[in-house]
Amino acid sequence: PPSLLRNGYSGPNRWIGVKLEGTTSNRAALGATVRVTAAGRTQAQAVLSQASYYSHDDLRLHFGLGSATLADKIEVTWPSGRVET
Image (cartoon, rainbow, N blue to C red):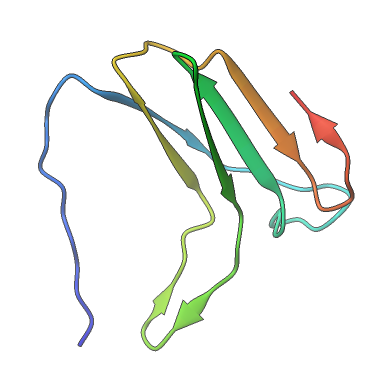
């Protein structure tokens, strides 16, 4: 059965959300990869279109920053191969 999960954590850790909009490859930015570096740690996520019964993935990407107040670097690799920072 479908489930709704809720995170009620209200600690001091921070996060950043990324929502891409493509102009050349595809508007939903499917296939793009985002790398976020903060406090010497790099995380990477890809924008994917996956779905299953009663569900669909959110195209927004969520990166935890821990105690860092901002990201040191954000790099986007588009499906066309173009890289932006």
